Length: 237
Length: 309
Image (tube, rainbow over the protein chains, first blue to last red):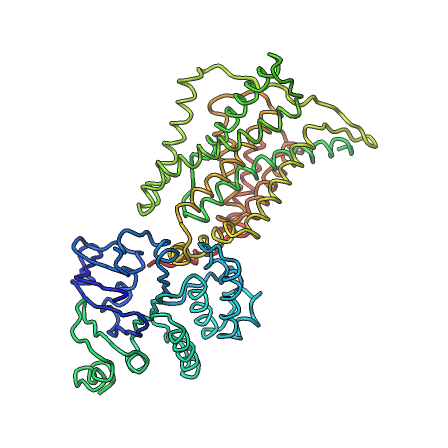
C-alpha cells in the first residue's frame, strides 16, 4: 500500500469533522472519495498534506513512513505528495510561469525542472501561450490546468485533487480528466475527492463514500455505480 | 524661497524620506507576509543604531591600537554590513520568540506583544547602557560642495544614494529570486504556500531579517546625520514610518517607499512654508485627509485577497 489511513479523526473545536475514517490507496491507483458538501472530503486531504492537526490515535502511513513526522512542506519535497486544493488557490499576483517555478522551491535538479516544465506545457498547451500572464487573469479552466500543472512541478508520486471539476464547463472538464488520466498513466497515484460523483466514479477505479465524517460504503467504482443507495443519493436516482 | 533654500529643503526631504522609507519597508513586508504589524520595529531601528555604534567603536579601537589600520570609509562599510547582520539576527529572534507562538492568535495579541517587545528593548538598553546619550563617531568627514549657488554635503548625498540602492536591491530580490517569489506568494495566500514545498517559517524569518537589516541601515545613516543616540530614539520615527507604510498601502513594497518619501516631503515643506512648531500638526492633517479618501493607502488592497482553510 502506498497510503494507509487508519482511524483518522479531525475536530474543529467541538465539531467532529472526521470520526475515525480508514482507507487505503495503492501505488498507481485512482481512488475517489465522494460525498456531499460538509462530509469531510476536504478535511481528509488537508490532514494528509498536514495543513491541519489530527487527533491522537489517527494513523497516516505513507510508504511505511509516519506522515505525522513531516511538516507540510516536507510532505511535498520529501514524500512527493502534492495537493491541488479546492478552489485552485493559485497565486493570482504571480505569472503562470512564476506559479510553476515556485512549486519547484524544494528541488535542485535544474534539468528535471526543465523537463517537467516542457511536460506540463505539452499537457496543457494553453499554459505555454499564457506563461507571462498573471495567474489571476486566466479563465476558470485555465486556472484548473495551472493548478494541476503546478502540482506536477513539485512532485508526482501522489496527487491529491480537491474538487477539480468545480466550476468547469463539461467540455473543459472532459479535457482536464483526460489530462489527469495521462498523468496517472505516467505513474502518478491519484486520490480524488469530488461532489460530482458521476464524474468521479467514472474516472476512478475504487471509491469511498463519505457521510458526515464516516465512510459508509466502499468498493470498486463499477459496483458503487450500481449500488441503489449511491444511485439515489449521489447519481440523481 | 531662493533656489539654494529650495535645494536644501529638497535634499532634507529626500534624506528624511529615505529614513522613513527604509523603516516603513520592514513594517510593510512583515505585514504582507504575516498580516501583523511588528510594533517593535521602531525599536529595532534603535537597536540597529546602537549595534552600529558598538561595531564602529570596536573597529575604531582595533584601528587605533595599530593592529590593522582601517581607513574610516572602510570602518563605515564594515559597520554597516556587520550591523545589518547582527540586527537581522535580532529581528529573527523577535519573530521566533514573540510572534511565531501567536501565529494563530487574535491580531490584537500580536500587536500588544509587539509593543511589549519594544518596551523590553528600550528598557534593556536603559538598564545595560544607562540613561546617558551616546555619540556616534564621525566616520565620514563632512564636505560641502557647491554647484551653481546650490550647496550640499557629501553625507546627505550618500544617505539618499545608499538608501535608493538598497531599495532597488530589495526590489530585484523580491522580483527575481525564488525567496522573493515565495514572499509574494505568501502575501497573496499564505495558507497554501506550504503545498508548494515552501517552508513558511523560513520565509517568515527571512522577512524579519531583511526588514531588520534595512532598519539597521536607517539607524546608522540616521546616526551619521544626527549623531546622538538614546534609548527612545526609535519611538517617534518608528511611528511615523508606520504611518508611511499605511499611507503607501499595507504590504506593498513600492507603497512603503512612496509613503516614506511623501512623508519626508510633507514634513520638510510644511516646516518650510509654515512655522516648524506646526509641522506635524499640518503634515499629519494632510495625511489624515489623504487616508479619508484612500483608506487603503496608495497601493493597498481594498480587502485582503486571502482565503482561509
